[in-house]
Length: 392
Image (cartoon, rainbow, N blue to C red; front, side, top):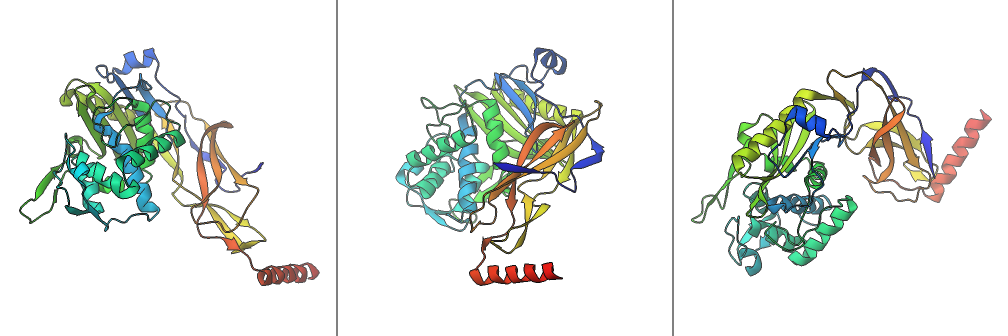
């Protein structure tokens, strides 16, 4: 059982009001806003809260083409965070990776390239060969990496996604949905480094060498749409033109997905319209910054005795402009049972944002340092201090 603890600070934010939008995907809204009319499916979500602002058949299973690489990049970023690989690691390209068709950065069998450069090859140029090379680096084979992709899809509760490869090349039983792509992207954006790659318009691999390769971002909105910083295009004959795009203005970031457009021009126009709608119709307010202290805990068996509970990600409200205001409160739930040691970053509870006392969304709370079990000597010392204090 978890015990409910009302935060003493920040729980009742009387001066901050907002109206939290629920899913706006009804036919009346579609007719009113005229968004993504020519897409097979589309969705727009606000990144911080995950709120769906608009959708059109967003859960329909469709071929995602190279947008598949969003999940590939997510697993790469997780491997970097876990220090299973580093950006400086050298990857030896296999014959299989070098044989990939479609979009590629023309890796050669036996060629050596850093993880950092291969991520560029995936994020900027949508390299199928780079994707497979990284999959083999992390999991040994592409097949094992794909198993990890599908496992991650299950963890994220993506009900309309299944992967057969790391690249998005046409394959049986390989599909996703606009909504699932948005959820994957939201998870990927937790790794702030990712936009350092996806926002690059052009770069080079093997710069200065005879086989120098010019990377040009397949997502042209990076250069033309204000605030655009990602994420991934896709195209096959079956999938048509697809794009998962991200853009940030001030403290608000939106994620827009379009699948099944007839031309890249139409795709980009629909994505721009979706993101325009998000920025023009909504605004956000920050309640807590990333890793901001929410409360302090005292655990008799913990070393240190006192430690902070912090937000894993920044916490925001979302307000639809011009709508009636609502009071915002937050509530903290912390686990009862603790087993030490606890590693820094471990989730130990959650913070729930409420609107008029109704839960809207929840975000994880973590410890911001390693917590070990106090020694017998330390426990005895604390007991004596407590007895002395009581005697006073």
